[in-house]
Length: 145
Image (cartoon, rainbow, N blue to C red; front, top):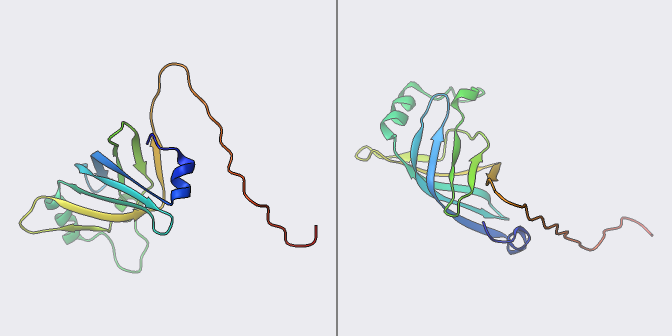
C-alpha cells in the first residue's frame, strides 16, 4: 500500500497479497487462511483466498443459510479481515455467504467473491506526514456559460 492512491485510480487496477485472512460471522468461523485482494475499475473489489473450516461450512450448508427469495438474516453475512503483506489491517463490509467452494476430500474453503466495501487501516507512531493531492479535471457545463 505504499503506492500513491491517485496513481492506482488512474491505472485502474491494484492487487495486494493477504498473508493473514480471517472469515467470520455469527454462524461461521472464525476461519483462517491467506489470499489476495484485487481491484479494477471495471469489476470492483475482489477477494480470493483459501481458509480452513470446510467441515464447519458444509454442516451449515446442510442446515441451510436461508430460503431462496427471503431476506438473509444479518447473522448469515460474512466479514473478511486480516493484514496485508505490508502491514495494513483491513476488513470488508458484511458480505453475502456465497463465492466459496468446498471439496469433499479437503478441509479447505476456496473463496472468490466481490465485496462492496473495504477498509484499510494502519496505526502510525511519530509525527504524522500529511500530503493533500487534488485531482482536477475539465469542468463540465450543461449550457452556455
